[in-house]
Length: 106
Image (cartoon, one colour):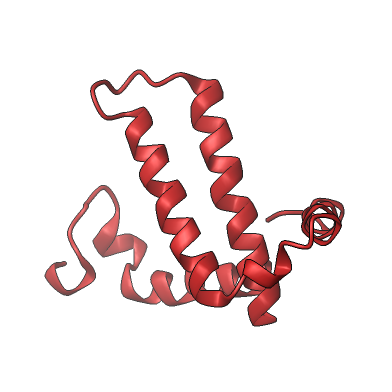
């Protein structure tokens, strides 16, 4: 996911500005959702969004995800790999390949 150097840079940026006081788990979760809305706004009227703007919004989302994971004390790589294993069990390749149906409709 995000390497250790990037995670440390995000933490240092936050510490330098004393923003940790505003980073409750609820506030970070809200911020992720808000930034995801801003990402969607890039595509509001066209599928051809400005790649720089999309990248900036992705960076904001990832930054808040890193901060939330740190606040919760979870390892991003571990939780993503765990979720992939769960999803692989729900969506076996032989039944899910090329289909967009939810697991209970396969």
